Image 1 (cartoon, rainbow, N blue to C red):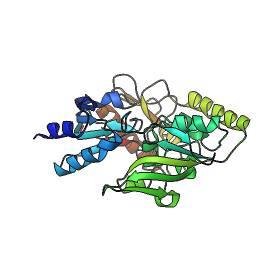
Image 2 (tube, rainbow, N blue to C red):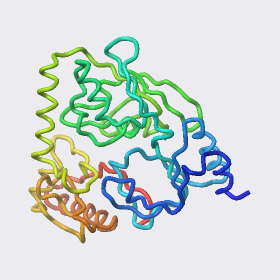
Image 3 (cartoon, rainbow, N blue to C red):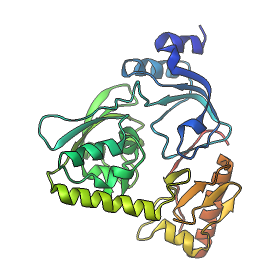
Length: 304
């Protein structure tokens, strides 16, 4: 039996796509075709992983695609998406009021919205992050001084060995744009956030303040993957890029945003190679100007 036939036997065939353009699944709106793009249910997930391992087929996991640059030649193997079927999108308060349980497929903005509507503080920073809980937990997403590790109580993961485990905050070990989940190749299935009760007026005020900052300072009207570079210690990537004279710098259809130099945007016709080459040139020019080597914050996957 072929790999495709085995895959159809394991999961709903209607949730399997071949030659699927990854441009449909990234906020950059860039990316070539994946050999297989699947959205298994939670019950089907382990069977898909086991089949890939048995057949030595490469496989990768994605969420909302908000932090990805996928090569123009696409992805060989299987892309497993935390979509509507597998990525539990539930967000609910269970037990004590200050605990919110969210499935990996839920949007971080939905969790922040539920928190705010229940007068729970501390998640305002995540209200504008366009990613899923699973993706956010993977990289310890953060913004405006807040990080998921600060409010995480526990995370349920699927380890590389295929075991489901519940990790507490210490085991999660979140750092700047990394965690034990990313380091150990685990998959976040569900997270529990612990938030204090706050002043409704202050929560709303902070949420609105951060929303206005995003609108004023970020190129939300153009496809991007958010902040392109990690923040160097004691520095800001955007300022280093600006100081190097790179505001508006372009390679093909990719551009250093004129609104915020920390963002690389797709002006409408960028290829992945354009973005990749621009990142490389920006890195080299900033190093020559300041001696600081920038590191990409986005995940770069696939073939170029």
